[in-house]
Each structure stands twice: as structure tokens, then as C-alpha cells.
Length: 226
Image 1 (cartoon, one colour):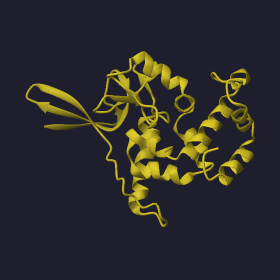
Image 2 (tube, helix red, strand yellow; image 1 turned 90 degrees about the horizontal axis):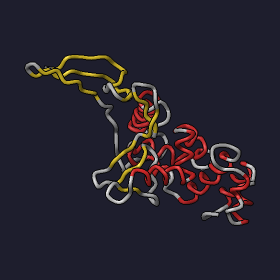
Image 3 (cartoon, helix red, strand yellow; image 1 turned 90 degrees about the vertical axis):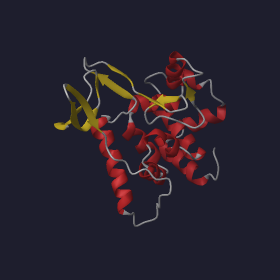
Image 4 (cartoon, one colour; image 1 turned 30 degrees about the horizontal axis):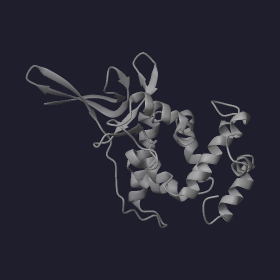
């Protein structure tokens, strides 16, 4: 027997993770709490030509709702019932692990190979994953949309949360733009400063010191990664 529960609350007494609705399954003398998940519209064969279909609209709507209501705008973080924040990990069936919405195809971690300490350290060592941990979902989307808004729509419309970052930054050119902008915005805060730039090549230092307008022009003029 199913008994209706509250809407828009966490289904867990230890961590705060908002679900659309809580239900209670009653079996004899047992009462089991259940969280009702969202229905996603996952599809790799999407049509991104205008006018956009109702399917695209629904897919974007459900992932936006998930980010705003269940992830509080920053999927890699989770908060427990005492108010402390920690990292929220996604684990694939083959042992691949990363923080939510933060997987890149060239940087894969695995439970059978990497220790917890290594996974956390490498997540913060990589500028792109660290920037997402620091700034969150909308901030990353804003940077990517400066030069390639279509890949954002693609990632949202495919509707696979596990591979959102991999789809968003699949093109090397867009990925490099995002990486350079991450360095620019990290300067003077978090762990990047002018002294750290000396570790990079002269060409890369030059690119990092360009204005956003100049960097965008370079992106648009280039047929390959710069």
C-alpha cells in the first residue's frame, strides 16, 4: 500500500536532496520511505534545428527544474542535515566516478584504480572541474554560451545528467575556451594567481591575458584549437 507524503522535500534524513514527492510503502507492520524521481527525456538522436520541438522544450525544462530544486544550482555539492557541505559523487556501473555534472572524457576516475583522496585531489587540480565546483552550473553555462550556445542546448536536450559535462565540452575548441576563461576568472581568487601563470608557456600566458572580447574573436577566427 502506498501512502502520499510531502512534496518538494528530501527523502533522506541524513542528507538534503530534494525530490518531487515522498511516498511511504506500507507492508504489514513496515513503513518504508520512498523518493519519487523526476522523469527525464534522455535521447541521443535529438534534432537541434529550429523551430525546436516540444520534446526539446520538455527536456530543457526538466533538467533546469532538477538543477534549481534538487541541486541548488551546484550539483557537485550536497548538504547534510547538520548544514555541512560535502561532495556529491556519481558512480557508473563500471566503477567510473566523478562529481555530479562534472565528467570529462579525457579525465576519468575509477573506484577500482583511484583512491578517494586521489579523486578529490585531481578534481581540484583540474581547472575546469575545480571551476565548476567553485562557481556552479549556471556560471559554466554562461561562459560556454559566450561562444557556443548550441552545445549547451545539446547537453540539456540529450537529458543525461551523468554525461552532461562531457556533452557540453565535447568539442576541443569550446573546451579550451572554457579552460582559458576559467583561468582568467580564477586569477586573484581560489588558487590561481599571477605567479602561477609563469608555469605556462608564453603563448598560453598571452592568450590568458587577452580581454574577453579579444579571446572571443580568436575563438571565432580559429578553425582549430588555439
